[in-house]
Amino acid sequence: MTIVKELDVLRSERQTAPYFFMNDITPSQVTQLIEYSNDLNDTAIQSYTSDTGDTGRFRSLDAYNKWRVQGKSVYTLVDAADNLRGIIWIASKAPPDDFQYFEVLDKNVYKLTTGIRLYKEARRSGLAPDFYQRAFQHFFANMGGEISNSPRLWGNANRHNSALLNTIARVGFRQVSYPLNNRVIVAR
Image 1 (cartoon, rainbow, N blue to C red):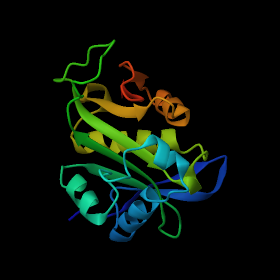
Image 2 (image 1 turned 120 degrees about the horizontal axis):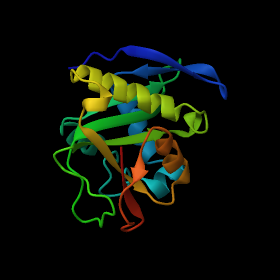
Image 3 (image 1 turned 90 degrees about the vertical axis):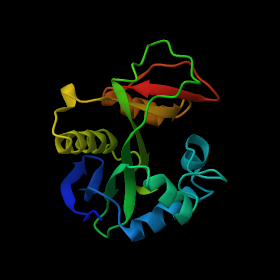
Image 4 (image 1 turned 120 degrees about the vertical axis):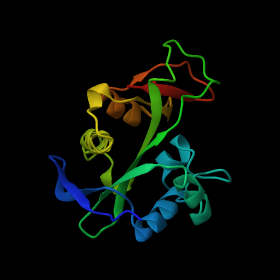
């Protein structure tokens, strides 16, 4: 069992209170993750992610546990009251074959997938790029390498989620596939 510990404090010009960058997720935060994912009033989560519905990775504790045992490194963004405000994960997984790519992704190089969620209270705070960079730095440092010579990352994004696409572009991701069912593959 990983001991969840604070790795850093993140601040933004748009956010007066600090957020804390953590190396994992606590059981109470998992409960919040499930609640946030099932919040029908959160149109961003409902519209842009595959976290909800009958096949959603965070629809229930059982679904979360099945998702988590697949060897993911999880980082969280929490407020001073230990409330979950964001989550990033990195896991070993090759890019999917069902997309049509305009840039070749060598599966021997692009070995890792990643995802990010910021929940209502942290959106538009300006913290997402820094949150991502800190997660990447911590992950690759614990692999014993540097970001520059480590396996490359890819992700799956909704092509209409301009906030996410703009954020991930700021940390080096670019679109590498044509849309399929409103999803695109991004890589860095």
